Image 1: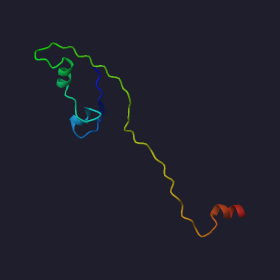
Image 2: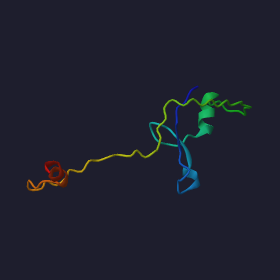
Image 3: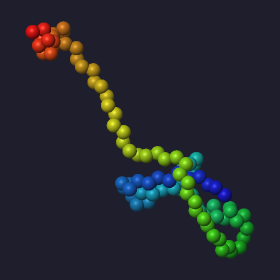
Image 4: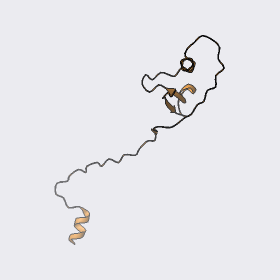
Amino acid sequence: MTKHYILSINPEAEYDWDKVSLRNPISGNRPDFNKVIAEAVGEEPGTYLVAINIEVEVLEQETANKQEVTVEVPREKKANKPTRVQELAAS
């Protein structure tokens, strides 16, 4: 049985329980592994000795790195006053 979850790692989170979280990608709920394992054995009454293998495959990674954005601010137009460069070029 393959289940998909969103793993979020945020070492700078305010609370310990938010530093590493595992959530369902559709509902956003945290997984109840007791329920997942019970579903895997068919939810039949009884006591089970189970072996659980966890295999993690990263399907997609979104980083929280901040990207630098360069914004060009338009210069104010001056009333046809020659710039210092134009004055020197004309000399």
